[in-house]
Amino acid sequence: MAIEATKIPAKRVNFVSVKLSLVKEGSTMYAGRFINTPAEAAEFVSSHLESDREKVLVLALDTKNQPTSLTTVSIGDLNTAPIHPREVFKTAVLSNSAAIIIAHNHPTGITTPSKDDIKATKRLAEAGQILGIDLLDHIIVGHNGNYTSFREQGLM
Image 1 (cartoon, rainbow, N blue to C red):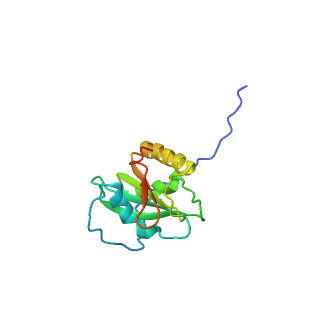
Image 2 (tube, rainbow, N blue to C red):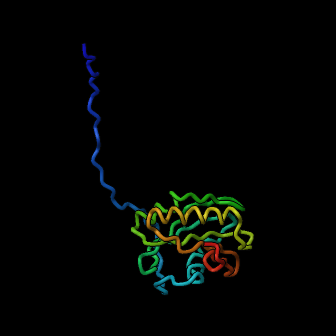
């Protein structure tokens, strides 16, 4: 005597499509057109990082290193701001970006990378490799135009 299989009802599967739906909060003209050096990137983002709290920005770039978008991905407190790969790469993926530069401020003005900064950068670089989006640099901005580039320091 064979045991009859229990009939399981069919599962509905939705057909979906993903459409670019970024909310544009404003724009700016960038006379330099291309970001070719860490100094150019630091200059571009520095005015957006003036804060008494740590802020993390993602500068998305096209295949010719032209900025396509700038996004705040985290606002923390006096000495920390969480950096999660999902949030960092969300805008880059939706913008069809080829590369990104991460930038954050140190409200103290001292731009020396912390151990957490270095660890987060390595994790982001690995995530970028998987996604096919290059992490070109991580820049820490201080006061009066001071910055530290992970690329220039050999940290990536």
